[in-house]
Length: 246
Ligand code: DX5
Ligand code: ZN
Image 1 (cartoon, helix red, strand yellow):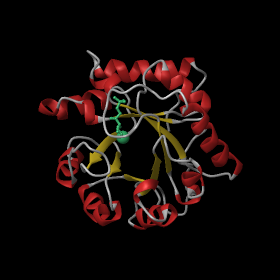
Image 2: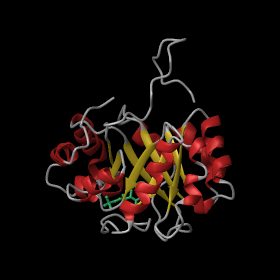
Image 3: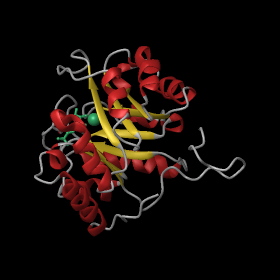
Image 4: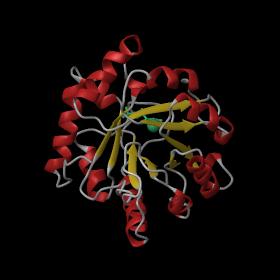
């Protein structure tokens, strides 16, 4: 894995996933695009860890959002890592464009590639954090078998394609299966959850083993998005998931 910028040469690479540390990742899908820079600044000031960017192509999922040009625009609005979630067919075809646009993490769906491990290695080969995501109806084993090549294991907790849906009740068991595999193999990989995450469901996901929390609706549809980030972190701390940050 590439060393984060700014690290002294020769120093041991710090762990990427830190036990007891929760990453909060606001999803701009639910932001007000007329005031996007302001919205992103508010969540960054409130301590968000990554900005989650949902790319949809109208084929892998019915909805259509945005591509690399918009990611490049978002890159100018924040210093936070961009966690780019590709809900598109043939995602590796577009990897160079998203890398050039300033993505830090590129997450592709196991359902969209023939060989998830090879896809994750291709993302790392671009010097990016690699992510693989699994839809609720796909066996998590398809993600688990590729975990050694993965920096972010994204367990979808709703059907991908739209914000504002309810957290699926079968999710904690799937999160726990991924967490067990990460721990038993001693891997340095985040277990991220996406969909229906709020102050009530984030603790359920955390207790099952999640340590990165994507939230769109519950943050950007709140009257105060910065306050919503802090409330989510407080809910996670209250649930026994530490609020320490890397
Ligand atoms: C759904 C997207 C999510 C979405 C989550 O397909 O991957 O990132 O923004 O939205 P909420 O938090 O509103 O469920
Ligand atoms: Zn997403």
